[in-house]
Amino acid sequence: MPEVTLVLRSTRVVTPEGTRPATVAVAGERIAAVLPYDADVAPGAPVEDAGDHMVLPGLVDTHVHVNDPGRSDWEGFASATAAAAAGGVTTLVDMPLNSLPPTTTVPHLRVKQDAARPAVHVDVGFWGGALPSNLADLRPLHEAGVFGFKCFLSPSGVPEFPELDPGRLAASLAEIAGFGGLLIVHAEDPHALERAPRRAGPAYADFLASRPRDAENAAIRTLIDTARRLDARVHVLHLSSCDAVALIAEARRAGVRVSAETCPHFLTLTAEQVPDGATEFKCCPPIREAANQDALWQALADGTIDCVVSDHSPCTADLKTSDFATAWGGISSLQLGLPAVWTEARRRGRTMDDVARWMSTAPAALAGLGAKGAVEPGRDADFAVVAPEETFTVDPALLHHRNPVTAYAGRTLHGVVVSTWLRGRRISTAGAVGQPTGRLLERT
Image (tube, rainbow, N blue to C red; front, side, top):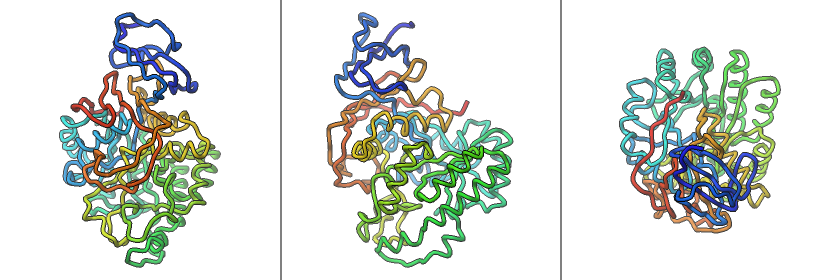
């Protein structure tokens, strides 16, 4: 064993083989060994005894809108990664839009990396964007290290990031498949959205009617058909329609390389709970009914939905007007994803092993982050130490998010993040975050 620089011990360490008492030996930035709880590892090495707190692999959040540069009053690399660290997230992958410029060319990627490099508290990678106009930029972005490409099949909400029609979707996907890349897709069908009833105002029922499940279902069907024809790898972002679960499962059985994610807000919040005018709950696709939520949990349990990621999409408070038709659509939850999901998971009889798989192991695998996502030898020494039975009440003013707006305000959640560790160093204690020590990641 290489020289041990840290010993982390707990009666509940979440490993790929299950939760058990263990001693984790760290050598430099990597896990050297996972040993029996009472192992005498290296006399003189610093020992961190977590007691009965659970030690999880650091979470990997592959769906974060940092908005920096260009809209850094909405969020920024310093504030977003501090929130991540306080919430047990040790790695995030930034979405290519809402920043100015968007990550759609290699020069634009360099601008974003320059903004991030001095500010990040956790490790950060980047998605590229697939637009109607940047087909020639996709391979250079892939070679520059982005983890894949995001596109929209309906309007994105920002003019600098237009959607792909079916023809351009096929062209982009053919190009990406040619170099073995991944396309991640906001799947809502624009024609279904145009046919849906639209009514301005504060009523959540009207907004929900304007984003029907049929829009998701139709877009996912188109995506699956295109991926099947091109033998391409695709990923469905922020799945909220339970109807589409069967489409994804059937496609997988037929050999289509399609995966899917959902988000904490779809698993923990329901349409029946959203007050009229409370646009902090607005997102696209929307939070749906309780019966739909039950089906999403079942799809997580049977593996049809692979992972749970935040889709953290913040904005300034003034953009959350009381009109659901005009308010910015996005949920701020980066710091709260783990306790939000754990609170509902434990109520439904799921374990922290499940949560670690959904929120760390599977997202790491999606992005090809082989050093992340598990407490096992050879991986980065990234940990979230959690008190799963303890509770807290969400006060937006105490979060590290740049703007104190969140749909979880006032909710009591289980699962207090006691400390967060990145590559063998503690970066957060009881929500207090130290100096930036994160690194920028590239696909290898």
